[in-house]
Image (cartoon, rainbow, N blue to C red; front, side):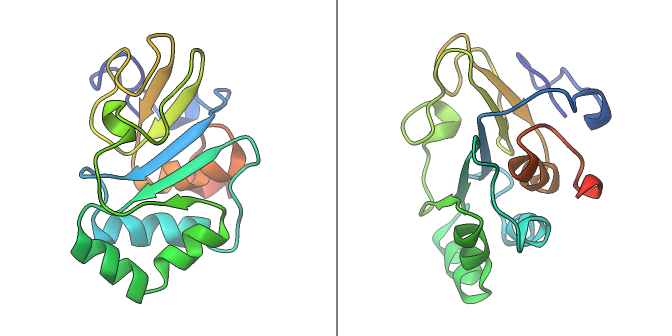
Length: 148
C-alpha cells in the first residue's frame, strides 16, 4: 500500500487495518484493465460494499468496458452497490465524481496520492491493488482480500 501523501510511502496492508475509508475507486487509466476488473469482481462477487463506503468502478477504455459488460463483471459491481462509470478521468484528479471532502479517506487503484489530488487538502488517498480495494470496500477499512 502507498500511504499519503506520496506513492513512495509504502507500508504492508497488515499495518493499516485500523484505518477506515469513505470511498474506494477501482480502475481509471491505472489498474482499470480487464484483468484488474476480473480480480476485483472475483473478490467482491456476492458481497455488498460497506454502507459507509462509496465504491466507484471505472474501466480503462471503451474496449475494456465492453468486455467487462460481456463477461458480467459490471453486473457484479452493480450488485455490490458500486457506481460503474464509462471510461473517463474524474475522481483520480479531483475533477468530478467522488471528490473527497475534508477528512475523508479514499482507497484507490490509481497512481497518485498527493495532497489534494482527489479533493480537499485535508483528505487522504491510499493506493493499492484491485484485490485489496475490493476487499476493503466490503469491510469499510483497509484489509487484505484473504480476510474475507
